[in-house]
View 1 (tube, rainbow, N blue to C red):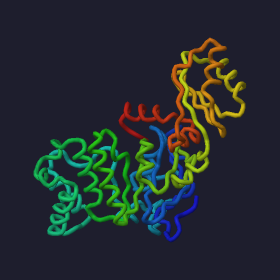
View 2: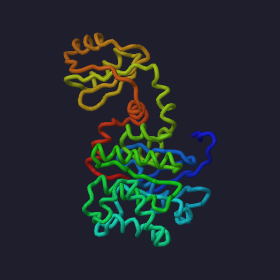
View 3: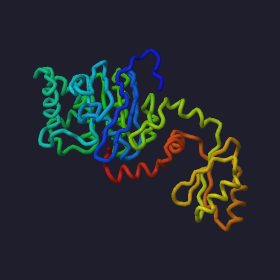
View 4: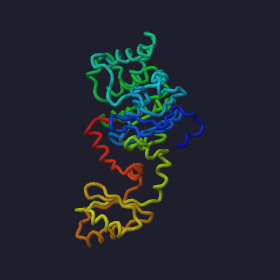
Length: 330
């Protein structure tokens, strides 16, 4: 995995492994994140994203492997780089009975900030995050979007050079998610190194300098969005939906279109990719000959979603539904 020219590595892991009984949540994982980089972990529920963040932030210890952050050896000394780290967990860790202002002041006190400094910093962040009017309200009464904003504010109260964000927009309405993404962009623009986990492909594509696809605790692909998309340029992709599908039909379809890459999706859907234009008429004739109705066929432009599906074998829509259904990650 190449590093961005002109930057130095800020986060480094080597052969990182974490097991929970018979389950290997993080499997021999090695990667680097450059200083000032926006690095994204993209994968389904249970892929190991949250476990990786917990290892990097000292909330869990690896069974094997090494972790270095800003030159500090953190594998055995989880507190070595704690003063440099900001963490925004997927579930808020703030106190519901405290006001927004008091929550921020309490977090600042944990980092040893003097009273006057932490009060000033708390007011500044409440203003930046558009929460000044809710400063004295109990956190329990905040909306989901407001809670997530305050949790991010708490994560950066001590102005850390690196911020870990675990699914920051999950469960947030569209307007709230857009606002949070803009805040995250501004932090990155100001020089913060950001490590983001997400199951939203469009979010990763929009925000990240570099993306790693993670499946079952392993990184199965990692690069810049531009480089990930490059092999798909010049390819022709079609999505086809049919009235019924079975193993025999799939085999016959593959034999009839040997120059195409075929992927069987759920619900009688096929993804067909080729270096040459795909003629819908040929598909219609094939399915008519096999007494199957072609319900829909449409050309699509190859996207990061296509790259994700091709590399991981996981359907993006299914990944979203699983994550939203469980409401959590591992």
